[in-house]
Image 1: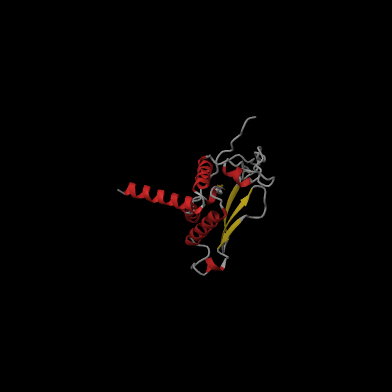
Image 2: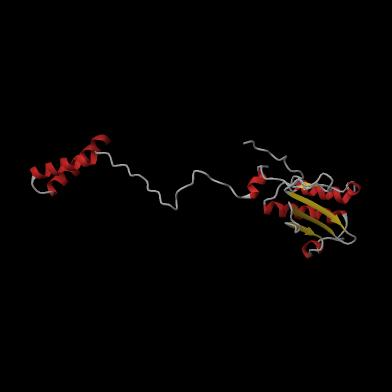
Length: 194
């Protein structure tokens, strides 16, 4: 019944259009022309490409951080006799003085740290009882790990000083960095042949 009702409605609409067009003979011709036009496929439009939207077939990625994350960027090798080794993208340096604990992240070849955290900072200093204890080292590790994630640095080299490695402060700093999601080693450099 529903199908007959829909068919009846469409027939009435068509008859109404024929009557509105005027003469019955010319209306039928008009109707046939409009039906033919509706039954033809619409022409396909070809997209136009402006010079601003054109994509170069050869793309050169000049983002050094991207190449570092894929382990394709060049690592500075340095001399074998230099210590610590110069073969890194980012290096973590942890130091303790008589009064403060400091951790810094250096990029390859830069003397200025990319990121740093210290118990000299008032925000850290006011939360700690002592600025040199094991808890201070752990707090510096946690804050620096958070800052590394915000900067997008998730892997770095940490070369400890052998005679200081076994101290509780250094161990708590390392575990805080690892628990913060920072990997303390970098992938081996990949060499792509021609």
